[in-house]
Length: 250
Image 1 (cartoon, rainbow, N blue to C red):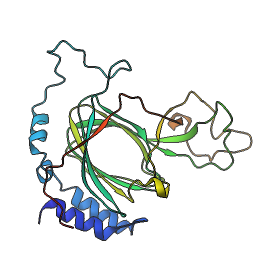
Image 2 (image 1 turned 120 degrees about the vertical axis):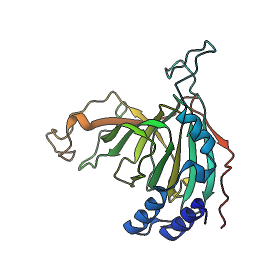
Image 3 (image 1 turned 60 degrees about the horizontal axis):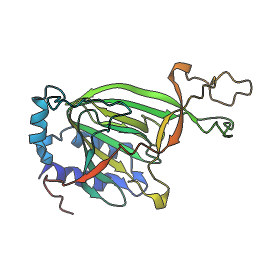
Image 4 (image 1 turned 30 degrees about the horizontal axis):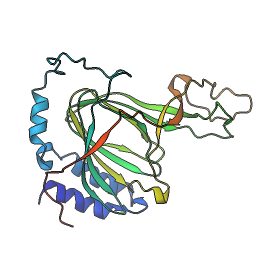
């Protein structure tokens, strides 16, 4: 049985429209994801190119930069499958491309880096005891840093939970890379699960030290960022690509 078919069967047995049916179900899917390779998804040629990759090509004379004045290279999304319980897709990211900080409300996300290297930054919202000042100029919310570092394939599958594990995260491709993502349940605007993007705010409240105890204690100030929702720049582009791997038999 093709690896992608085994993965689909495990997802079908493990996920429901309300998410994973149990922790064991997540472990079952994760164990299969750990064994997935680019070859199983029709991406061996792309993976081989990365093994021989020596850095951005600047022979054309154009600067290669991820600065604000430079257009980011478009990202390609390969749709594999989606139903009410889960979705499977692959993000193919050229070097220097960025997926801005975004959330997965009420969702569990399993991600497998298939090839290449990228930088990951992730956060979880901080639970508050009392209300946060949301007046004009104070629309940001506090989040705790979970991860800020590099990942290189081959590596283990990561799991993000609805309120832990780094549910808000961003990716910056260091080399060409590909991420296989499984979301359960999938994004659905009708059900209130829509993707929002965030950036760091200049707000610098001192959390955990307020006189009224409005923020829960136990989070070091260096781990805290105030995040505000925003619309990503027009240079952020995700294009639909053609999945050429083995087809899933429903």
